[in-house]
Image (spheres, rainbow, N blue to C red):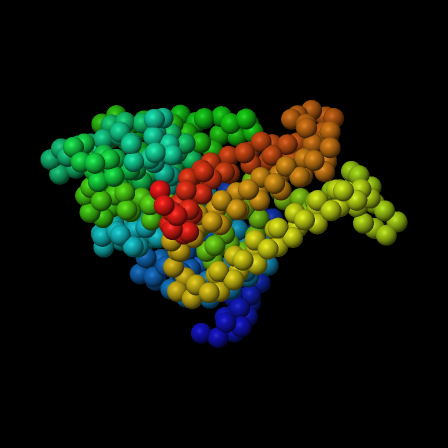
Length: 389
């Protein structure tokens, strides 16, 4: 397919269909719902998925081009709990799922009709995930689950959850684990949100009391391999390595700030228009160079990855570096704003100033979510650099 021709066709379609009326409409309005149905009919909610499962069957280069056109037009895909449906369980089912699982679960994701969440960590099994104790016991023709998961992002909003459970307690801790799919809308599933210091509650505790699993993904007792592969999809999405990372559309959450403009507003401008404080100016330049280097490396990686497949252990490099860069951006934003950037609430602070502080508080979780940076550095040392244990 000619990429420039595809870009032109996508741009024309977006101009005709993503009107100012839809752009201004609230997220829960009939206009937005109709817009999402149009996107789903085009297969553009999951553009790289096969058409039989609701995608558009686009190749990697076309997918990147489409996401870039989405970004230029200001199009945001439907809220998907951090991409867990489209970018995590969806690709995992495409790789490991049965035909029945794909036919049942993928089309609703491609239509933006369902949300999924992740059941991995437990109160006693965080970084050492393989020590998990939530069990699934075969009862007739289905598995019954008992146990607790924690940090289940978006569980209070989700319809389904993919869960790592212990199905063979006698096997070694890595060998007796399976991945199961669970309907959240049943009496045996209880969700309790966890409030963070930023004031939001994206994380939850999820309890299973004789909950029934819908099905097992892949081979029984081989869920550790599948679970690790899903994490590679997750880290790829967090770092922006996939085609979705090519989009310039701002994700849901606190707004991004142009640091140089903020610095001029709060610290003043020199006669030549530059940030007045030379030390702060140098800090901003170095940070911008780091951001640009990171983005250029992501672009190069996407271009070199002609197949469009999620990369393996290299995802840990981008996830760790990206998390640190995001935290540095939030830190620098508060530093630039100064004392006004410490506001939590009240008339003495603007919405932007309060947003900067809450964004800084929320950014602390970025080097924990999706696998701690310490775990990522271990993976890099062992699997990328080949260093001894």
